[in-house]
Length: 466
Image 1 (cartoon, rainbow, N blue to C red):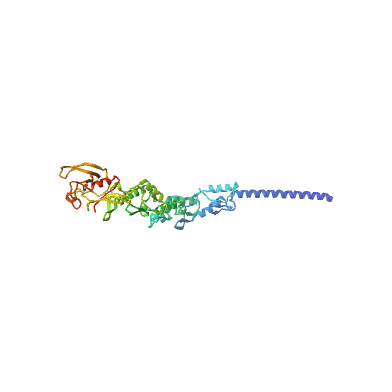
Image 2: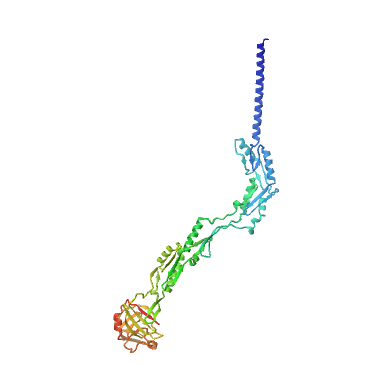
């Protein structure tokens, strides 16, 4: 056999061997890949964490066993606002993995290409809910005497009659039913840390609440405002925080409210009383004796313009300023200030003075009402009318009628007035005590004409008892 033939035969054998080796390699690769795929489909991916348990490369059955080992005797931590403690379960709640359905679903998802590695079982863990509820009832934090309820921030009145914010209070109150549901859901998720702080009842209104701050500032600006009234008799009456604080009230939610309109209306009622009282008298400089106090009837007293006063108060309050002023009047109290023409009658000294443009043109004794039965009333009056040559008619105390002629008649207080009395020969002194008039002011006949001629209906008549 030639050498060439030998070489050809060697090459053919070599090719057969290589093909056999290649075929064997392919067979082994297919077997390896098949085994790898089968392994991967039956084992969790590397790094898989289920309920905080490392289940890397474990089968469903192996992962179930490992998870149950953890669930079998866990240390359960209970966290409250003001307490935290850990208790070993000792199978008190019978926590266990009830079935492998969710584990199989997780493995299938990974086989389908899911990249997620961290899982939490939602439905497969069994917890004895009755025992959980009974156990929670033993906690002292759920006893009524240990519960401290949270409280909202609120406004309070300080000793200086200004409002301040009382800060909120964080308590420890937890609704038992919510606590039970949280404990159950936490344990069923496989977690062993039950944090009740997330369901602890919190204050709803904090001291930083813009609405609360705005309310405080708004009310305090009113409380800090004040009005000092100068009344007709120069006395004062104040509206300030001492009064306004009593207008504040708390509604059913404990929040301070202020019904300013109704409060101001009530205050103006009080102001009206003060003004009426302060203008019930008038100071008059009586001839020869100086200042005396005279009563003023209601028609001559000061009256308040309620609408005007209310509008002004609304402008002034909420400014934190002090105002010193008179009330807003619709009419001021009657005054003789700058009055230079008037008539003055002193029923004690039994004398009449008439001033015209500051000059006394009449100064005469008189006889006034019979004291005390028909005493001539004191006050400020104006002539009603003037008439000459007339008859005055009336009834005496004994019931008899009278009728007397006068030359001059000037009534100023109903049927009381000035007239001449020709039947009298004396005036002044104490004649009025027992022999006085029915209330009129009797003038000597020689004085009456001058008095009548110079008296006009705008001239005030001041009657007083000194």
